[in-house]
Amino acid sequence: MINIKPSAQTFVSKLTLTDFRCYDRVTLPLSCDHTLVVLTGPNGAGKTNLLEAISYLAPGRGLRRAALSDVARKNGAGTWAVAADLLVGTETVKAGTGVMEPGDTTTSKRVVRLDGKTIQNSNTFGERWSVSWLTPQMDRLFIEGPSSRRRFLDRMVLGLFPDHSRQVGAYERVMRERNKLLAQDGRNADSVWLGALEARMAEHGTAIAVARLEFAGQLAGQLATEKKGPFPKAELAIDGWIEGMLAEGAAAVEVEVIFRNHLAKTRGTDLGGRTSGGVHKTDLVVTHAPKGLTADLCSTGEQKALLVALVLANARLQTALRGQAPLMLMDEVAAHLDAERRQALFETLAELGSQCWLTGTDIGLFNGLSGKAEFFNVSDGVIQQADK
Image: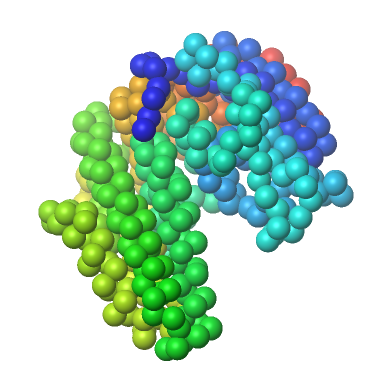
């Protein structure tokens, strides 16, 4: 359940990193006089690392989806921490997360704290605020396999349904257990235990499909109301057989039973240790509405514009339904847009209300933001306020 005050804005007023990526220890205070924060500097200076740190103030694995042990500073103690003071509406919130004990990719455990208290997991962050991002790695979203688009979809769903991350995580854990049992024991696997796992998969999978479908409907409505502008109108559809049954009017309880029965019938097919059907196979289909072309058939520039259009529409949707725009992290987005689209993007981000972080190697790309943003120069892990 979302409990946010109407018209709440979210700002990071202080960010402290300890042994995070290239940073030994750094504290970045922000005035919060402007909604835009611009980080400039050469490649490899640490700009994206700052955005990644903020992305850990949201449910999930951060914008790089890195193993927790890989985030720790090289030659450090193997631990790391991100702490932030946030202004959420009229409230000041202290949030933190990190790895307190060194470990490897299988043993590292993330600790999450809110206002000085340790909480169960990062899903609670999603109940208080949301974080949205766009990175250069996402430029290939429409031409890669469906897994990237599915993660993109699920990240957007989180903005309206904070519990979605828990459902996805639970589904994936149970599916791994089922896969392992079938791979190890084959046809001799305990049918009772398999049945219990499949019942849980069906429960979590149906909840995931319901949230995706509800979100897609809301976002489609938002996209339909978008005014004509420099970013093309996008249409989207969810390609998944479980979501399809729900879209055709089947009740969630009915779909859950069908999914559970399907898993039981396909045990023989799944003996290799891979579940052949489920919400982990769903794809997101995006269409360039004015041209009637699916995104994968569009040019590189059009694909980028479609991606920006989706991210902006999602931010507007959250603002309308939650009363709160997400924190926005836009990594190297300006360099790949023409002047008209770049200016339109800056204006839209500034109008959303919550803080938006932008990075770039060329400060000239942000000339139009003089007096409208906080500027920082990042070089070799050192952050200095810049005049602009």
